[in-house]
Image (cartoon, rainbow, N blue to C red; front, side, top):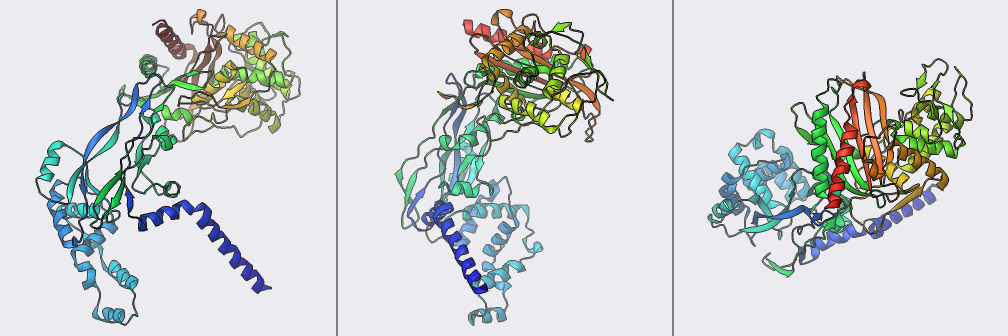
Length: 632
């Protein structure tokens, strides 16, 4: 029986190996075989495609740079290569050597380390009692640290020599990158036949640091991505997109490499020219982007003058096309104590905050779906008092409100009563309000269908969904309903307001301009209820909490939000200071949604009675700017 199991095990292992060779590792091993056997090789990575804004303005381009290249001559000796390295060493500015590099250099300088092997060991080698691997291992182990403790001058020689040995024998080795014309003249003046000048490209950014973190970086293939790229027929020396849109659209941006034939003397003959990669066009409007950044900086500077804005150091703003999910402009800035600004736009996908009442459109949706709201029924705004909990109220007495005016005036009480009904209970003063996880799930499932607490599926390599509260309690469910429990990313707030603009149809957000939009899901809510939600959110900007945020003629629809939260003022891992987040999300015009706008100002103030009108000013300035652009 054991023998049968053993044989079966052998067949399973053998089958797995065959599968890996023929399927999962097929491209990898095919590439390796070609590198070893074919006389055809490929050049360096070709220039990448450009990144353009929606109006054809170049955001990311290529610029030619000069490199000094070494091509190993046929039959050149190690001694001759060391002489070349010594000649070039004075021009080396950056020493970058590993222990392996230093040991290899030692072997090259010292007769391949043969003196490290004893006569007895050479005799055993001749008697085939020691293998080549044994001899190499002995040499390697006997190179002690003090033997490779080279001077700076010697390390420069070792650095050049190491560059000369990289890759296959027929490949060009880059010795000096991105050098000046004067530097080229100096090197060529050394009259070293194996050196030449080659033009390659590097990324350049016409608008400086603007959106640079969003564009991402290009660089060498990492160990973590090596298998992925080898399976796609890349060479390990290729330059690839390592982050941001460069990584997201690598397959489009990468160029087609030149093809060469390897001659018998290891020289190369060009067979096929390189081709630049494809350009990609973004939804970004760079003029709008620059205006948004300028406005954000101005308003952050003014807000910081308030004594209550001690912890206000970062803010986000974004403008989108609600119909397509296109990102027209997006900015995240961090203000240092010196008044300088850092670009943190990328954290709009990863950082999350309590957003406050801005989410009440989704909260009302939960109420409609679960029978917690009776259309048109008026209730007197008041406070909710739960057992052993302090009273929870609206920011002021709002009188009688219904499902529409509760949104207009931002009644917390209305949402509290709705949440209690959603949980299958009726409010009584000082009641024990016991809830279950399923009551939270009723809210979270609807919120995620709007994009809150879910990935927006934006065309970007990284995105997080915010933080879910872990405790289950009645007062926390009430907090959830007014946006003061779970946290959401700024980018998800944009998808949320877009989904309302599209009457419950949620589309993926997009940087790259497309002729289509990617449908994700539909919020299961009748259009008649959406009519009431949009009417309530319309009234927010027409007599409600955001009356002065946008010119009324624009017919904006949306919601403001404030959230009481806490800040870790001394960075000890404990949130210990009460602060207020301020948010707004809206689209306009109501009848034909063209723009959506979101502003998130975390930790804007420590006193709600002395809060700088940050979100209002951004909203007003940017909508006025868009209006003037449309007129032009």
